[in-house]
Length: 361
Image (tube, rainbow, N blue to C red; front, top):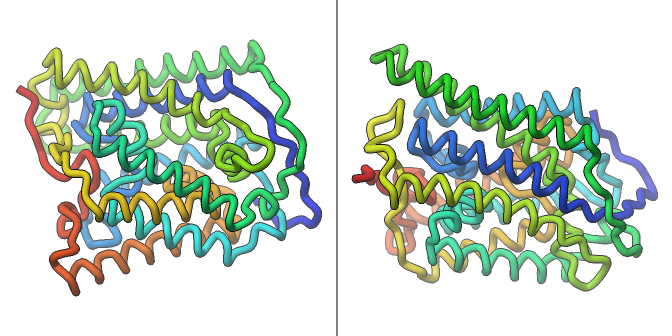
């Protein structure tokens, strides 16, 4: 369990190989979830649905997979997490979480739904969201003094290569994930009714578990890693680009297989693909992205790593998650009070990639 320490000093490390390996697991999780259930790898959507009272079984199944992955990382790869210094306060985490939750709800997605899955299918809407939250995140990181709060030393990041053991571990995990998804697909094709529903939940949970492992191995569960990327005014760690790059490339292959090459008429265990048809770039999207980025820059945590890091039970992460949910509640109240400001997916608590169900032809 994490505890607070004084005088922490984090020396950033440039780890592109770890990032590529971790990002590949994230991409595999995204493709596995898409092929089997037809849904995107959206974390904020799963959380928002539960906050808004949508108890569809896939939502807790997905979040449970993320938490299980966090527990596995805590036991087998504790370096995936970091002990946050006293200067990274609970109040900072609370403000960051609230803005991330409000922004994700307004903008209809997050780093996984827009940043990975949306960009993988070449959505201009998701690209706009991504560019806005990146810019806002960098500005917020600088203005809020996030690097100092995270205890980042004023030292240029040193390159750290992945070891042979690292490569073998991720390769084995990736092979096991692909084999697992393939097995679930074969089982799903041969069953029906309640048994098929069970397969859907297992597939969804498995995608969350693999996603969590990818986040942990890539370093995304360490706030200092994210802040080091957003901190353009100090020592800069570009590792995050390699995480998103590999995840998007692999995910793009999966989306192309479905949308362009029509390899499946429908998901293996569900009735239709839930792929967004939204294309409008409006002020709600951009405001949501700006708020999301502001929270991300303040705390260095986005929804997926936040849920995974709950395994460490640190007060900052727990405060972040609670305030993230509060931000989503506030968005719902705003939408009810001013229907004209309602996001296309607010009433149904669906996010990017879920806002409309479109069966692949």
